[in-house]
Length: 502
Ligand code: SF4
Ligand code: SF4
Image 1: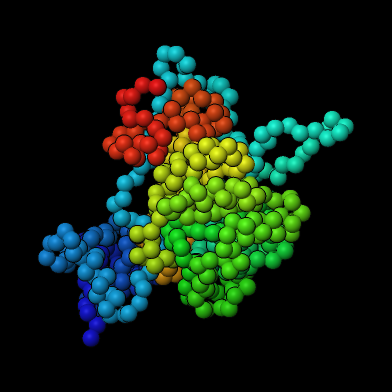
Image 2: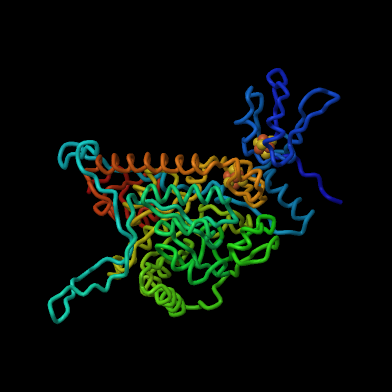
């Protein structure tokens, strides 16, 4: 017998406002709304609602709202309604619980416990409207000493670098997990902004090769869609060793999202779940990783910087130290609140560590070992605003990956049901009737708007600190102070408590 599981949300319709235009019925891919001809009114099956707000936003008379259902169990702080429902679901199905987007648990958000400095009397602030303010930067190895050949000419042994107009990149989101139109929006925005977007492990659709100089292609454990032209088409190659939302396991693309086009791009069968292995089967040590780094460099004639992406886990500093010695040019660290198109709920909600702590630890360790300039660091995993970017850079990052914020700009309402493939906003879906809801012209413009605004705010915050370049902010922890943090947290973050002088 299947246990009845109460609806999580309730669809409330104000019948006085509803003019039975049936927009909600057409807009909801979850078939929540229907018209009852006998009653002459709209009805709702709340059990199917994922609270994506599409109908609420598009209802012309604002007759709809979605509320948390009050069909709940006896109050119990330990056995919450969600916990009980999850047990019922697993007892019904015998399956692993799947989720999407980032960890929603009430873990501390350290960004919100860090405050940024501002100049007052001495070392005055800089006005970014009137004075130059440099947010352009390069990612990759830095020259630590000048070497000359026998003729006195500078030996240029540096790997190529990535040039960014601002310290932000779009993080890996595969074609398959997100739609063609979402990918096109990201690619076009990256090109216009002078930054990069990332294919994730989904391969590169042939239509997007033209954005190659703003593209980072990924090589993940499944090696989906990886071949010579794919590697050569991009500005850089990222080896994905781990991901913040699901450390220690492989990727998962539900079969329902593997359409003909996605299967061709990924070079995998259509309609069958694509589960990439947890490890790369040729990497069991830093030496093995080094081999892959150099194989990829070799395959692309040493013209592309190589990134290695890892999940933020307990031993992250030692792991990063090894990666820095593997020949990689850039390390991307993904914190435990990072998003995903699909992950087992238990992994997403319980594995990994926050990016703030991981980043501070890694930067400190690389500095202590004198190898900080061997690699650049990209921090990701719930970077939500320009102030998170500023704090990340002051904690030691060179730049930040953003994923969820970019999807929000495209219209995502964080309903966290991407894995079901019915995204009503045309983002995390492959259904043509839903994909066309996202206009790439509008999507690209909204992404450009978002990051243009963030870049202005970054300049204002830097100016306030009396700093006029990203380079001068990088690792400048004196610009940060903590509030509501323990001594251990302050020590790991390497910052002082608010009120403590220099
Ligand atoms: S799933 Fe979205 S569109 Fe459908 S009823 Fe719920 S909020 Fe509205
Ligand atoms: S991308 Fe779509 S399905 Fe995923 S959380 Fe956002 S609105 Fe929901």
